[in-house]
Image (tube, rainbow, N blue to C red; front, side, top):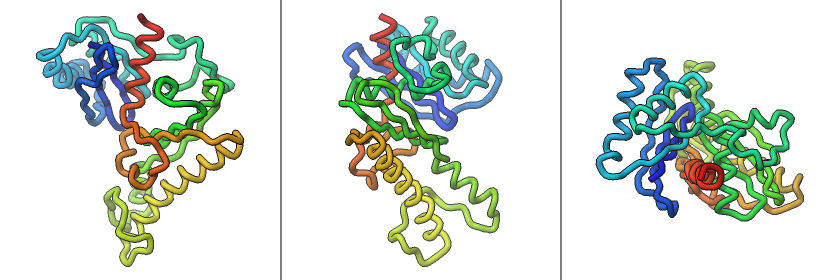
Length: 254
């Protein structure tokens, strides 16, 4: 069994797969940003102990976009699982063509979602990964990483409203009953949720126009569940990144 670990700024998602890509176990936790090995080891033990009682974990592969805890997390999983594991970077996927001036700076999360999309979908594709930031990336018809855009994530926008306009109330990340609300909270919810939805749709349309091609559109990431019912033209694939890690493991490391 192979454990895939996605460390993002908001969540850590761990998924255990067998060799046929069957998902055996998954867990999503808030990212622990504590620079103390003892505390991180306790955190990792909470994740791994139930798994070790049921499965034999032979190896792991990790994607991290939180540099301050990457080394700590890697060491904690190594100690707990008793194997070296693998930390994803561009050096692991030399065959991936990346149309960026600094291709080696492509984030591990974007590498993994690219391989997840390449494995499961026809190209070209647009991948919308909704986390702390909303990342919209493009894989072209030649199966190359074409480019991407970054938008403030839903929670970032929500928190910004509270931080810069403190007299406004806090609001839940939910769609109001109607677009034109009748109170402050419903009006704020409509603005936040529908601006996000329309940004995703509008940018996707612009990408297709620039490519002059229709793309398969994929929705993933920790906040994708909040908007999936309003983006019905998008394939909802919450474990795309972890499946990409699994794909990389088998294609590049075995």
